[in-house]
Amino acid sequence: MAVTEATGKLGLSRSGWAFVMLLFPGLWLIRMATAWLSGSSLFIDEAQYWDWSRHLAWGYFSKPPVLPVLIKLSAAVGGDNAMGVRWLVQALWGLIPLIVWRLGWEMQRDSGLRLSQAHATGAWAAALVSSTLVFGILGQVATTDGPLMFCWVVSIWLLWRALQQPEQWSRWVLLGLVLAVGVLSKYTMAAVLLSWAVWWMRQPRAHIFKGMVLAVLVATLCWVPHLAWNHAHGWPTLKHTAELLTGASASPAQALGTWALRALEYVAGQLLIAGPVVLVMAWRAFQESKWSHQTPEHSVNSPVVFAWHFTWPLWLVGAWQALQGNAQVNWPAPAWIGACLVLAWWLATRPLIWRWSAPAIVVISSSLLCTVIGLGGDWRVRFGLPPLAEPWALWARAQGWDESFQAIQPQMEMHPDATLVALDRTVIAHAAYAWRVKGWTLQSWQRTPHPDHHYDLTSRFSPDANNPAHAKVLLVLQGPLPEFVQQHFGQVTQLHPMRAVGKDLHVWLLEQPKP
Image 1: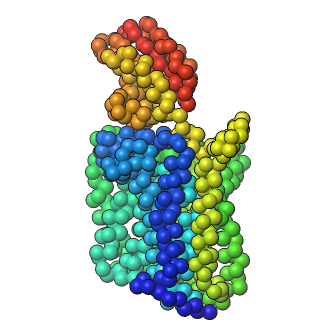
Image 2: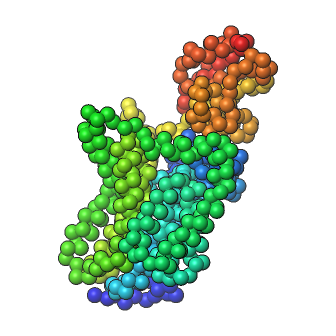
Image 3: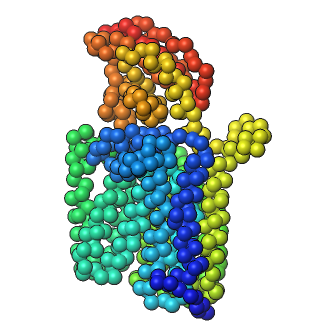
């Protein structure tokens, strides 16, 4: 049953425009407000990315270079505070639903299927993508998942457009540029090529093959500086990624049980990042699709088949990684974009009167859920109630660092000629951010033969009795002093401990380096 609405230039009613404003800037502002209300500083990865942004390069130990560039631009506008570091990446998360909407609208238009409303597929897809927990939680912070997800959905949209007119080479060139930026954001983007290959095998046309080759060539040219940086530094980024993908395999005797457990953990993780709102809507879509009289044919050109091919290959790669014992729950997150498009198509084909309130309710309910998850650990304190013994606090790992480093700052100022050293990247990254005004940086003291993180690669500390700069060292650490420290220094003194604030940091004065 068709519904006629008063429309504007873009075919949207006032309710439609209200839904647009809910998606962006609405969700963007909600994410920023939630992060701000948490009262936390940066997470370890965010602090490290911010530190990298002060020294831009074509690569880093564990990540390619796009995110530090984005943080550099973000901080240039908003400042080095937590909101200033995050706002641009948060904006990318806010734009993703609008691109998904446009993609869903074009898929509905190009398929020729007449539904009750021209924006039904796109609006539902935007609502579902916005309602995933990975969007609501990771959308609050500045990590590589933001530019990855943005480039992933833009690449799907551009590929759909290129497939409609594969002889237009400019569309493939633009697709190649987006592919390049995506891989330079996070290597997971390279998995989209599996979906390209699967799609071409279902539609083996010469123009499409040539276009895909052109896009890959354009992307490869853009990757040359990053590959050159890796080559000059011993390929650290690629080695780090390979270690994450391989993990630890199980012995043959333990293989079956171990693999079954890892598979269950992987499935549970994927359901977790989807979130309860999306899972409920998926169940409804599945149930109601059985009664729909407008279910599209699943031909080669079907939008449902197209979207599905950007889901299952990445899920399979993620499952293989999980069986290796080194799965990261957010690694296959882009697969949910294709899954949400499939679910949106099912929801749009239901023989129901179209109402904008339906997807709006989905977005609002999921946003409230993510806000409660993000700030839930603070509610008892906010109402004057005693905190729980182990309170739920999503932001706990990002809280207390700035205050802790400011508390030990007087101790550092008493020894201005000392070399500053730490034993792990967490302390180094948080110290760089907390002491950004002072400009102090900590060197990385690691005893492994090969670098374990970026600071091992760029500012490695090795005690040297012949180096005058090592005559006096200030060691900042959490926890007890390791025994190997006294093997390298004759005099080890713990400076007068300050009142514990946030994190339990200790400062040791190391003198008389041993040969």
